[in-house]
Length: 185
Image 1 (cartoon, one colour):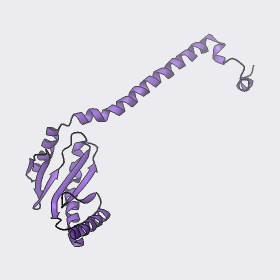
Image 2 (spheres, rainbow, N blue to C red; image 1 turned 135 degrees about the vertical axis):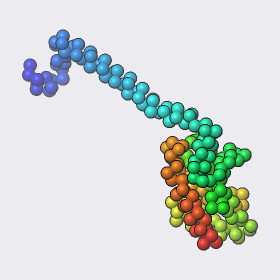
Image 3 (spheres, rainbow, N blue to C red; image 1 turned 90 degrees about the vertical axis):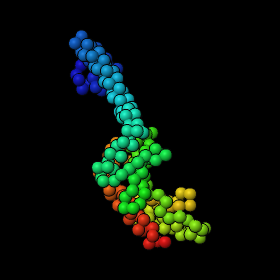
Image 4 (spheres, rainbow, N blue to C red; image 1 turned 45 degrees about the horizontal axis):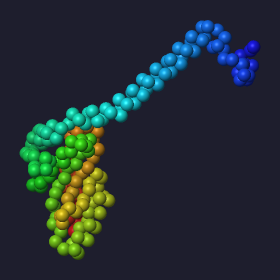
């Protein structure tokens, strides 16, 4: 039987069944395919659980110490507040870095209580000014909390210490947000 006619004739037995060498090769191939499936499944599982394993290495105190050490290296004094966040001053403004051991790939630095809201009519103006900030600046969020305006930069950083290269830019864009907010008021 010619190979071409075998390919067209689906009732013919596979070539591997006719010769002992091909039969053992067929079994080896099946075994290798199953082995490859097992290794591939194990690889996928390791990828799935690797971030969780890395996240467990960053406790609240380790995150706090990393932020405090970084601030000190930048010439800023930091301290841990009653919520466990790290507070510091920059250009005479009070900021905090949110410490969240449950999601330590998320980085958030906040300038809080920058503008008290004293009336309902002022609240409308504040909301419009916050919208202007949010529309015009990258990564900056202006919002109200307990009758006051806060400004933040929120980022996904991959690993907790990846915030360092963009930290000063984050503070600068928050200050630009404050300037824009005041212009709108």
